[in-house]
Figure 1 (tube, rainbow, N blue to C red):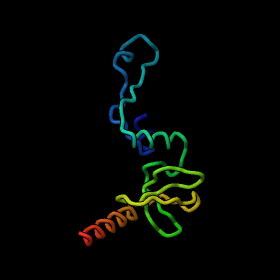
Figure 2 (figure 1 turned 180 degrees about the horizontal axis):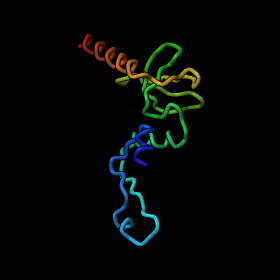
Figure 3 (figure 1 turned 45 degrees about the vertical axis):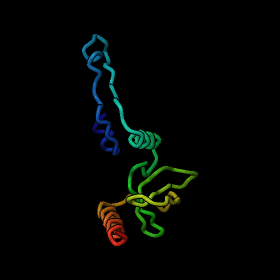
Figure 4 (figure 1 turned 90 degrees about the horizontal axis):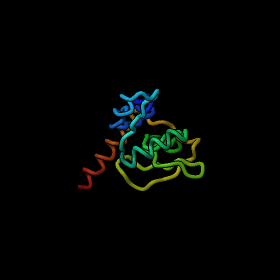
Amino acid sequence: MRQALVGAGVVLPSLCVDPVTGASEEPFALVDLGRCNVRVAERLASVVRGERPAVGAHAVDTRDGRVGEVMGHVRGNVRLRPVGGGREWDCPKGSVADARPEELMRARLRRTNHESVRN
């Protein structure tokens, strides 16, 4: 399960087999999913619902090349927030692509440069 979740971009740090039921005569031990923060829970729910891209992933609005973090799926659109924060925008699902690592890095660098000029 841990590998499947990591493959979907979800990490549950306290995922483990319950030691009490694991040591019992029961045929199936319980899995303790543990605790996670709200962002991880949102991402897990998004993955379970089959939303693409999943909440928490980074995507590109192919209409203008902006990179954003997926905040949710609303009425057939994907809600994106600029890398590093800012005003969210809606993008049609057909105009969203997964962000490549170099696109994400460029967006972060652009944000850092913008902030350094302002300060």
